[in-house]
Image (cartoon, rainbow, N blue to C red; front, side, top):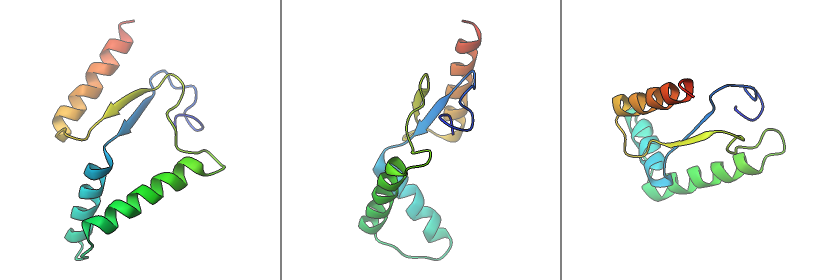
Length: 94
């Protein structure tokens, strides 16, 4: 979004998590809706989606110029929100 839609944003964040964490989150989501999928299958699906997103011709997935990469692999939602607020406040004070 930061490379195409919000290319002039004052603050650009690229939020990411490790592949195993994203696969675990997707597996939990699917299980909550009654679907059973192996961890290996979910890892493969997420990895393949990453490849497709990064290689697509129109607006490929990549870190925008000037973006701050934020990893939320191990963070609770509250800790993550506070981390984002700190980044914003530090950017505003510059």
